[in-house]
Length: 200
Image 1 (cartoon, rainbow, N blue to C red):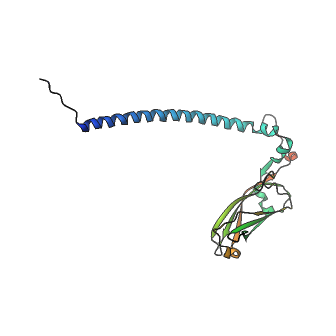
Image 2: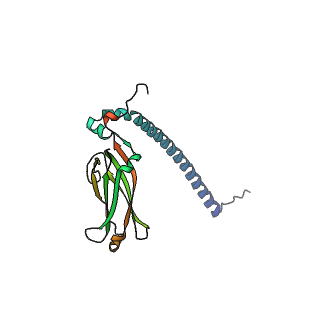
Image 3: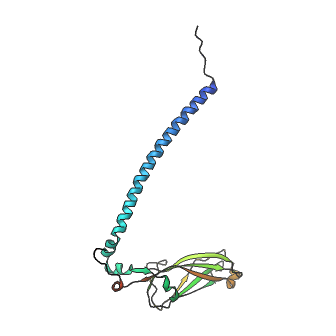
């Protein structure tokens, strides 16, 4: 006489959960491997595109219209910082509910500043920084309020930054500002650009 043992509910539940887990792990592994393969292919294509773009950059610059190519001919010039005079003062906003900084920059040198980025920090009466701003004061082209154009030799530029409600309007006279130059580039006339030597 043959006796059959019935599977207990706990064993059946365990086997079902084990089967679902195994299927989930297998599916997840397949999806992960497929995703990694796609990412690897995209990364290779992106690196190839970046490499080709960098290699063709000189040709791209040469193909630009002369006026635009000339505007984009500049160089980083940290040594020119001594020729830039800057100051910042704080004024009340139009509604009197906040404080905003006003930057004044003067180009005391003989170069055309094509890019000038600054960071402005507001310090309270104890010299503690309480707020800071990042602003671009000069750009290669004048386009809108954020692209103000180059800063010519001898030129003075005033830039009004966005107000801050975190500064107490009653203490506006006690705030002082510090300016840090974060980017400075000067325009290089085409006749001063380095001459390319064949084969280099």
